Length: 117
Image (cartoon, rainbow, N blue to C red):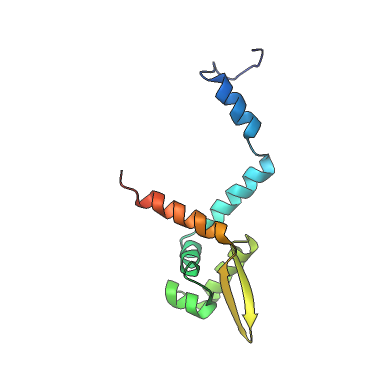
């Protein structure tokens, strides 16, 4: 093996596999941004509320306990990150999770947190 490493490798095969399968920087940056958006308590509560079904900003305000302006601001961030989608019915805009992947991430993350040590 002629590969140069920063430190003496203990498992060069796994190092090489990790390097080969590492997503590009743009992908890891996008993933990091995804977790930053989900890392806000208010946005996380909104996502968890939307797991139950489609809700408007007023309903979400009642769930989270914040005014509609604050909710709308957070919903914009969630829409920009493609975590929620919206549809308009008359004058009311309804929000829902963008797809099943968001539900899966929330479910698995919560299960992990609730695991007993």
